[in-house]
Image (cartoon, one colour):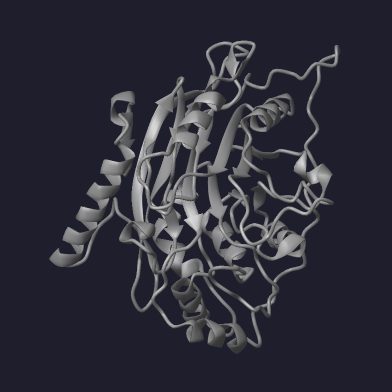
Length: 396
């Protein structure tokens, strides 16, 4: 999230930051998750995991900006007492997110202590209560690699991951130490499939990776991504998902680097099996196309899920990607995508910000017409590189 224009007064943000003197308590951080052991055959090689696994659905959504001025103000108003509550803002998409077997989000701000201060652009810091809301909405894991990941330095990375651990959200893209950085986020679907999420950013903004801690945030590098995807496969992942934070802001078409990286990553194979099974990108602040590249689905940009006033109206638009995976026909083959869908959504601004699922429009005629217009614009962007011919449809 780089230079975009804000229209509300900075004074409101300052008032919010100091006005919260008795926030809701947050539980003690849970123990940091340990890596799951990888079953091995007698000869020491990893056991093939596809046998006995069941199909599953996976959804991924766009950037969450919890410290945007309007979003922060709404979270304060929605809290029953002191503190911040983001759950009402995300209620509109909860049915879609919670219905999936696995759900991935992208958190585009470091989290601060309970007492703040909480700040918007250019140096972000958001209330830790956003973690509670993301978990309540149905998310299982969040990408944390972004332009703003180091806005609050290494302590900010640590606080963010501890807040996610506290509520039981897995995370990918940043780490507290080298061992954590080397460990893929492995998620287990209800049917037994194991899914790895790997996350990377094109760069960092106000905070640079310190030389003594290069593991704090993952940077985009094709060779590294392929290496870590293969490591995730050896660790037992049936499906490997890469979440890149990339692209040019407010540009619908993917830029040259996105296209080049997508081709490199999807072309990588080991033993005839693709190393990466799905790419779901964020950062552009506008919905970008879906495309099948070398037989692998690539979502160049999901847009934003939760945001305040942006430089362009499309900064409040997004798509939720939904894919259904089925086990391979034969051991050693890749898991198959048997259904690919997008669900348009947008963050409706007003007295209180609310995220709307545009597959379920309602209200009076003027509202329905506006929702239909936005839905069509999102669909036009999503389908602009021929994804419809490869089977992508709008979900319900």
